[in-house]
Image (cartoon, rainbow, N blue to C red; front, side, top):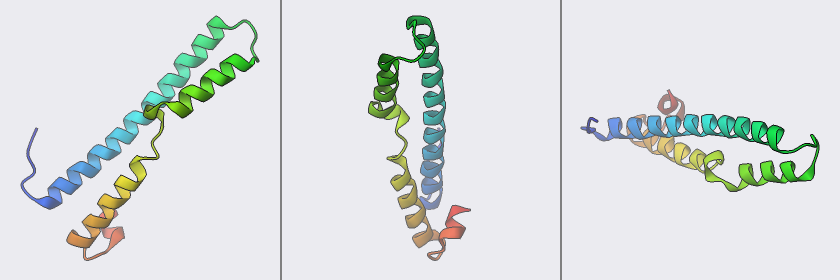
Length: 96
C-alpha cells in the first residue's frame, strides 16, 4: 500500500475508498436479501406471514452494513474541503 505524498492525493484516496465502501455495502445488502429470501422460502410454510416480514424489517433497519446514510455527509465534507483547498472553491471541478 502506497503512502500519499501530498494532501491532494490523500483526499482523493480517502474519497475513492469511501466510494468502494459504499459499493461493498450495496453488494452486502443484495446478498443479505437473497439469503433471507431463500431462508424464508425454505423455513416458513405460509408465503404471507407476519414473522418473515418482521424479520426482514429488523434485519434491514437495525444492521449497520445496510445503512449507507452515514457515508453521504463524509463524502460531501471531503468534496467541500477538496474544492476549497485544491479547486478554488469550485465544487463541480472537485467532483470531477
